[in-house]
Length: 254
Length: 220
Ligand SMILES: Nc1ncnc2c1ncn2[C@@H]1O[C@H](COP(=O)(O)OP(=O)(O)O)[C@@H](O)[C@H]1O
Ligand SMILES: [Mg+2]
Image (tube, rainbow over all chains, first blue to last red; front, side):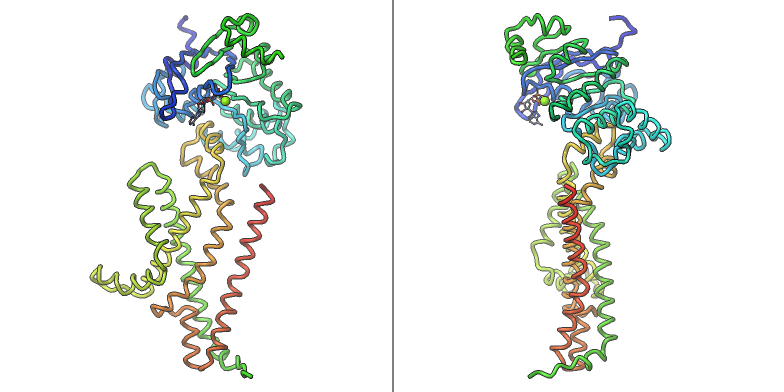
């Protein structure tokens, strides 16, 4: 690795336990700028827990965690050379399976709230950015609508715009199409695909194997809290080494 | 056949007005203080400091598990013996009513906050909001809507509870009604009128609470 290539996120021997249940068993991961990393694996293998550790929504039990070379401290505020959880989260965006839009705010307010409150942008700037993003996800005309009046696909596109409004260095997406009706999946994947083309660094948990095959620069197969196999889509999806991965993939080709 | 005579009673209408005014003042005053006490107690119970949680919980249970009338009498007659100086019936009454309603408000506030989906807190955290920012801009606005019907109901009960101040001779509506009665010897008319006055104050409030509840169920 050369000096110019500092990973955006770097973790070593990361573990996470819930009480006695150890969910992550020593994860090593370097996320490079511009990468689209796809996490696949059976349900319960720890994909969500891992991705939620990457913005400290879950605080890891042990292990090393660096963001752009800076050590991440387990407190909200940054201090000295260490970056705090608050600063980490504003630079690592997250999109959830169930959208989690703010129901008491309009589409536009959902997107501007973070920039206004956290980044202290002025109203005009925040609104301009939000409108550009809404345009990009094709929902400019919904700016004054409340989330209840949107379809699932529209909600998820707003949620992506909300995360992007913080101008994050990475976007984490956890099964963002799993709660959608099948006919609405495409419009959300289209937005992600276009984001990938702009060079946005992303970590994507997904069951959309063909989408992962098309867009991912690297795929990680997780099992029982470990990274069981990793490689390019070509290597992993077309020439799976382990029997487990072969079995896992067989279910999607049926 | 009883001969109704509201005329005599109504001649003392100014006494009723004094009572209504006092009832209003004690209600509004104790609700205002109660909201502050309730909020503090609610945040204490949600805090990560066990000592604060236990303290808040103890206060709540103390006031929720003893009769308000006993609390009022205790504050006026017993508390001065503990303190070593006397306190006015106004202070004792207002203090007790406030702490009493505050213990219930705290529970209502806590319920409202806990009723907000935990995904909301996570979404707020994910855009870098601090705990207080998330509480102020994301959780509270949603929690207030959820707690409003229960809050209004508790406040309606509070109006009625001011009548217990009768026991320490505070000139609220019930006490003033007893004054009218002793002057006119017309208990039926006096107390009927008092009941009607309470009803006219409270009925609109319960209707508002119902309205909110219905509107909320529709928007869910
Ligand atoms: N907050 C939590 N408390 C307790 N156990 C949890 C919690 N979150 C996840 N788990 C457990 O961790 C394991 C991995 O879950 P998860 O990361 O959601 O897997 P995946 O996303 O791959 O399906 C599961 O056994 C799940 O029950
Ligand atoms: Mg999951």
